[in-house]
Figure 1 (tube, rainbow, N blue to C red):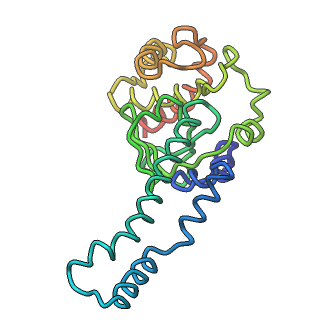
Figure 2 (cartoon, one colour; figure 1 turned 30 degrees about the vertical axis):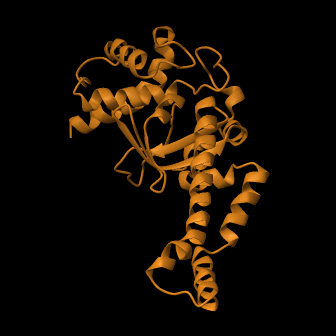
Length: 239
């Protein structure tokens, strides 16, 4: 079943490609210039020039490598700068990341990654993130405009209006459920509501910049996002 969140993830840009895809025009042009020049060709040109001058041997190695090193260093500097650019906008709420909790299955659904999680360990090439005891894989990035359009954000039922650039509380509640489950703190024989204080405590400690303070999240909002994973866990425990 394709949910709005999954449809949004499908339209996203893989994390490792986001620095180029969301780069300003001037930075994209710089990237294209840097990759038009081949490091191998630069090395070959250096070798040809040295041969033409009649210079050979180990003493020329540094000169041969100088051209390729400049090209590769410039590319590495661009990657580092634009990754910081993407991270800044992910933390500010101008961009949003969506990923899966491993292992991904046929019916797995992606989750929206709270802004505070981007302080964790990022594996750009793998499009993975480890943060606050959780791991997210196959991350894709979307713009705020696309997110709001696909999820119809204007009609969402929030406990309180979210602050600009802050994520909604739903993904954070689901993350709290997962963390508490792994810690053995979810009792399927108890009521859902009895777990809400644990969720609020976890959110207060691990996601301090929620759009709604953890202690102010209503039971109605808590139930909306806690109920589904809790019921799935309860059913699976009785099989």
